[in-house]
Image (cartoon, rainbow over all chains, first blue to last red; front, side, top):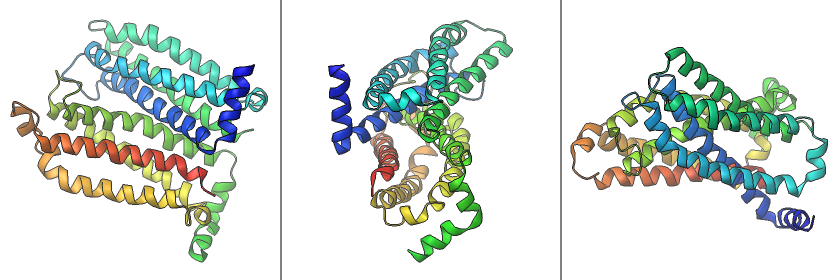
Amino acid sequence: MFLQNAIADALNNTEWAFALAECVHIGGFAIGVGSIALVDLRLLNLGLRHESPARILRYTEPWTVFALVFVIFSGLALFLSQVSIYRENLIFPIKMYVLAAALIYNFTIHRKVATTKDPPPVVSKLVAIVSLLLWVAVVFGGIFTGFLV
Amino acid sequence: MTIAHSIQSIQFLSDFSESVLAYPIVLSTHLTCIALFGGMILATDLRLLGLTFKSLTITEVVTSLRPWKRVGGTIMIAMGLPLAASEAEKYAPNPFFWTKMIILGLIGVHALVFRPIVYNKTEELDKSPVIPTKAKLAAILSLVLWTGMFVMGRLIAYWD
């Protein structure tokens, strides 16, 4: 409670703090989702073909995790700064469910298929498309949270 | 200000900015492009700096991502135009918007300067035992310019 108020005060009363938190949040998801999308591009066989999806994942996964940590903490700060507004928001809970699904999917099914040697191409492609759709849905959910209040 | 007013008064654009759905959909698409294609720019720059994707040649990274970056850039600009034009009166005096446009121009200059000596000469870069300074310079400038684009884009909303 104290922390919530402290964060809310800092973000609402300091002109640049909210902007900074938003910059970190959006920049973080750009890097996080962008790095996942590189694996998806490879799974779809549309780029970086000279290397296996497993290897691409090994290169990108550290950025994904690093970026997502920043996204989650900055997102938490943004949420705590206006809890009552988010509580009444119709889109926000949907965004959170889709985010949870995207995170679980990314570190289970997506990871498993990317690290499997020669999975059936249909499976790779389907897994990549679902991954892209989930993450795009999270981004749309974020914007709509801000617009449909 | 009158030019800005007449731009945003165009029927299509005023409908757009008042629409409950179209405006956030276009904005979400603009942001999705930042993630999808920003990630590719980052990947290219980090490869040019020799920091990742080392088992792939520079040629492979640059050429296989190039068509997608073009698609992404086109969508991003196509979405950005109505976003700015429909609120032309707000954007016209906004210093962050103009800084963003200047950076966009500088990204064009960056392409003109470095395409012939770096991005179209990737085989030469791959043959070199160490990554040449010009390639690293191109990558660092690209990172700086795109970060600037991103931050200015965000700050546009904070000026009043």
